[in-house]
Length: 302
Image (tube, rainbow, N blue to C red; front, side, top):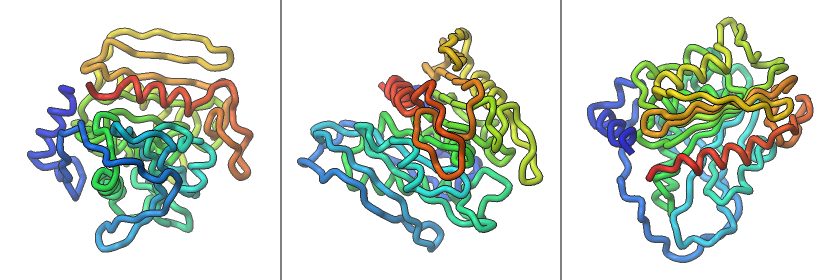
């Protein structure tokens, strides 16, 4: 709660300092009134950013709507799609409003801000405007608005965590691509609950970091360690889950815990998800979707 308050103060002072060109403030009210049932299913919707229409998919769960629902924004990897992200992640099965965002093309492939190959568009503003639009039309619980990213989408998720902690309450990444551009604003970021997954045999975004597209990217461990330091965590525990090493940092400022799941011999896939394209079969040692949902729900704002 302290984190959200301080983030809101920073936003009022001008989030342009953090690289966001469209500061958008939302009401602190969370006890929203739900006016009857909303039709479940998936629809294509759009927002206008800098004069350009941009689409996204919105999945509405088949649950009662007497209480506000969590809102999850999911970002696919480079070359992926909103529909593909929905397929591999199964996030639409969760009892939440789930947005599957769609990146713009750059160098022949859909790509997100936060990478050297990203198109010159403001994806942070796109994400913020999606939240605004969904809140206006649906019963959203502002205490649980989350960003989830795969690969290049993980880089954008890093940006959102650093720049828009006034909106997003916790984030998750899978096989995240953490280029230098994904750290814009992180030196001034507020604490944020973070959970990450990465395979040691990821041939696209190496677990130990490396170079791709002419630029370096950091390792999953280095990215997570940055959040451990920002969150001022004091306790660490490690668990061997049989082919999966789980490290958890707790006793953090404002309960902003950090977790990392390292999948031995895991590839560039969504653990427990569906196989996509020519990628290796999804690792089945853990179910990333179930674990992510548990973590995000546990870090819902009070």
